[in-house]
Length: 201
Image (cartoon, rainbow, N blue to C red):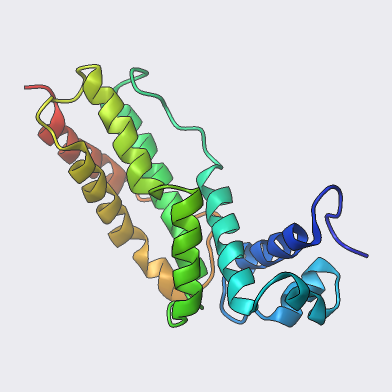
């Protein structure tokens, strides 16, 4: 019997099954047989709906990343304080990357999957975390809560780069961590450093 049938198409059921496996175990050892078993279908069914294993894995990665990125409600510009909001955004960035990066451990050396993921991600999720941060900073800048001469896109890239450096070790574990450890001193120090650079003159 198909799992999670409902109104989902078989194509969607298979992608969802693969995304669940990625959430639990990452992409290391992810097989067509495992995806079919998780979905409750025969192994050959996948090839009736996808060109190959690479396609379903790329789509499942996108589904997993999208679900992680939409797990948290972030503050809007003008609410609270900029520094307090930055802490929330930083915690979101760290948590998101700590959960996402290890999921790619099994596909880093598989360019077909990576290329298909990037294509699908670009078409359906815009610029991801850097764009999300940039949009927030840009909105605060319009309100005068960030200096007018600050390059918000460069600031967003710097923030995401710092989060990457903190979360990157998780990539080598090869398994997503739904409850990553976030160091408060890292978040506080980075938020203070950013504010020293972008506070209104």
